[in-house]
Image 1 (cartoon, rainbow, N blue to C red):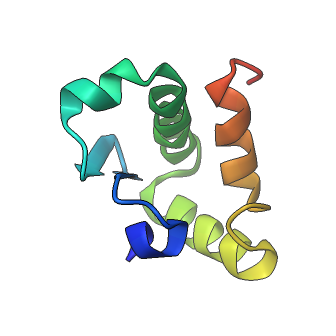
Image 2: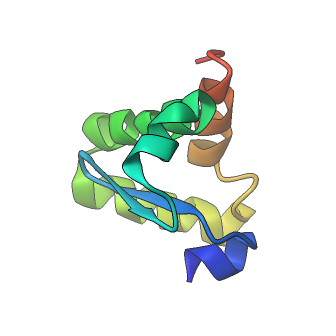
Length: 84
């Protein structure tokens, strides 16, 4: 579902402290430093908000503002370059 929405075969999704991968090997994922930092930011967001509260807030942000303007995604994109 995420792959189709984002128009890519390679997907990473974080649930709690685990980064789940689809369409990419762990080794290839870890070579992509920006993508790794992005997903690591989501792990930190889970830690800061708690599992269920983060999921609720993330979904609310996505419904309200869309994926690209979701504040959690904006922060994670900034983390890709070390801005956060």
